[in-house]
Image (cartoon, rainbow, N blue to C red; front, side, top):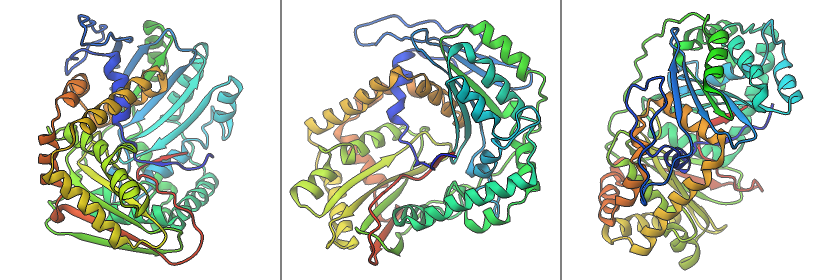
Length: 476
């Protein structure tokens, strides 16, 4: 299995991939008919793709996008289950189950999936996040029958042999221990665990070591049966395709899988934070780090877009405030970045961090970070920086529009988190509408000590290099 990647992806950098392709208002309940293109205007970029959405009788959602210009096709299955759905004492079971999905069925024994996809020149993998688990195959368009067969089979026929469970447990535990040995990853983990008191975002996606050790084959089987079913999944297909043919083939493969009984889960709502929280990590490392995190709303809030622009202004490039203040003008750090992802099922964190110069203390870094925050609250952002930040966001969007895999990721995440497409169709307009006053307003509302969690990494000697990685997604 490939190296685990740790990214809580800033989903905004993928949004215009969808927006530029679909500059139209889509209805809440989408029918099987193709969507009509919008009228082309000088201010509205022409779209390249028209999506079709189908709902099978067993509850499976199929979304297809025909991109005739792509040499490859992506076939993805998104399950609306991730670490937020895990019970206490069984953290990490979503990721553990993801590993087990590659260990074999009667039709595709262990090792067959990777080998068959490789033989046709394709790529396959999977990833687990807080809100979802997804599987994909990127293949030549004429090889689509292979991923259809693979994914339909393992949706319901996973063997979960005891020996394979123990083998994957050892692999997952090694991944988990690598996380613990990485001082920066340990800091991120502790900040999230401190910021969230009751919500499952408190737990790392990979799970706590003791839970991984105690998760049984029966636990995994029950979890698999409870969540892996057609009415909890979306199939996304993007590339050169004929919609009617794909619909027929998906119906033939998935249509006979019975609808499952989805258990209504009560996910604890995180209460409002009323006082500053702190956590400290002392481990061998080369550089000190200070991380500051604040509870913020997700896509459902009108503040989501201003917060996305704010994080770009603060840390999106070398022109950003953090970089200019802490690295160029008053050098105390070698790096200063941040992130905010509104595309989450439940409210998340707006955070940033600084890796200090060797003789800088974490407290000094915090003082300098606080100074930048206060500047945002009291001084209007320079119009040139605000305009540049918006341009950088939208430029990145445009650069992403060529990827069929990125398009599939877009729709899959939206389906998993039940995000209305109107959020995206209005995105460019809403980004351009953000003002300096909006940035000041959201900074004053959310970036306050009573809503703040601070994490310090104090190096204790050693030569572990800095490798700050965002929390969240784990790739097999």
